[in-house]
Length: 307
Image 1 (tube, rainbow, N blue to C red):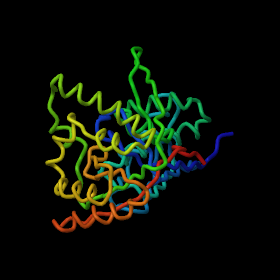
Image 2 (cartoon, helix red, strand yellow):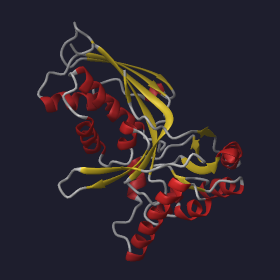
Image 3 (cartoon, rainbow, N blue to C red):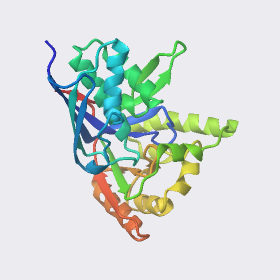
Image 4 (cartoon, one colour):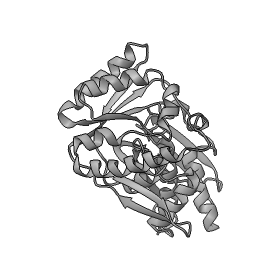
């Protein structure tokens, strides 16, 4: 008999990591939790949403809630009636900041529906549906299965998912500013075409990045984080980008990139320099009137958990 209550804990993610645009992402030790409880006396499809934590007042509480939409979409695809549910959301991942908050909702809703429907779908099938809902794999794949993951489309429309080893000496340091940048806005500034030189540049630097993450070799990592596909165009949307980057590197970071679509900035730092890098990034933003929360995190290797 399927459970009547299920809790899904989903990690935040950081995507792109410089040259890995729309194909590379990593799960981080920061989490959103989604608890779905079936209401046996409720009308089919009815919904109660409760949210706590950071920015909880901004969570939609009707059927447009993204976690619920993902939940309902799986039931609909199975031809099953959508049960009445109470959805309790506990938020740690900042909204619209480039840390995969939408991916946590999609993965949380799909896994909850799958569990409450007695697990008709495999993890791979859940992943395929998550990618279809999100539109690209870079956030939802590591949110679901953890680690750092490279995703490549196969000829038949399926996906090859490759785990990227992450050296223990590399610490993710994030600075989350008090302003937002929507993914749609961040995509609007990107060009429709790129030169051959830029494509070759990114292919070379993505290959170098994969080896740098695996080995922790500092000079490789410093060079590998360069990108010509998205970051040069998005930097202008992020107030203070250059100042924060300059300070992060001066404080010992290997380099700095835009996390996802931004505006959160991600520095890669040696563990012993992480606190200084975080402090410097916050100060650099504060000097131009921007308050920023800093987070020194680790790679989450487990992915989403079903309880």
